[in-house]
Image (cartoon, rainbow, N blue to C red; front, side):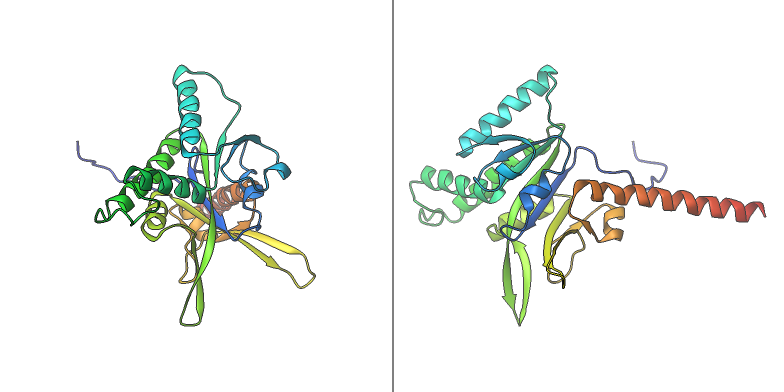
Length: 250
C-alpha cells in the first residue's frame, strides 16, 4: 500500500550499524575501533591488537574469516548469547588481498587481469569482498570496517582515499552509511590530536547520511564522543522546544 503520511527523519543514534573507519598507518585506527562497546576484534593483520582491550581473534585467510562468520551466525540463529556488541574487521584491505588471490587462482592466474577474461575476475573479486562485508553487517551487532588511507595527488592537492582498488573502494563507500576518517595532527605543544571526521570535501572521502553527524562534522576519536553528539543534539532540541513553548504561553 502506498504511504499516505510523511515520516520525519530518525534522529536517534544508529544501533547495529556498519561503520567504516579509515586513516593513515599507525594513526590509531585499531585503538579507536575498539572503543565501540564490547568489541570482537577480528585481526586480519597482526598490528596493534596487543595494546587494546577487546575479545581478540586472529585469522590468516579468507576461508578462516568465512568460518568465523558461520560460527557467529549459527549461534545467533540458535539464540545463544554472545559477549560481543561490536565486530571489528581489521582490515578490509587484507580481506581484499585474500579475495584477489582466491579469485585469480580460480581463473588459473597469479593476479587479477592475467587470465584475460574481460574483467570477470575483477568483478568476482569485488563481489566476494562485498559479500563478506554484507554478511557481517547483517548480524545483530555494530560492525566497524577498518581500512588504510592513501593520498592521491592532483593539481598540487592531495585527496585522502581508501587503500582499495577503485571500483571496490567506491562500492564500499556506497554500501556504508557512516564513513569516518581518523585524523591525527600534531598540536603546537607537541601533543597529538585525533579526531573522527565525517564531513566530506574535495580532499576527503568521508560522510554520514545521519543528519546529526552531518551537522557536527567531527568529534574526538572515540565511540563515547561520537555518541555524545546525539545526547547534545537531543538536549539542544529539548531546550529549543522549551523556549518555543514559553514564548507561545507569553
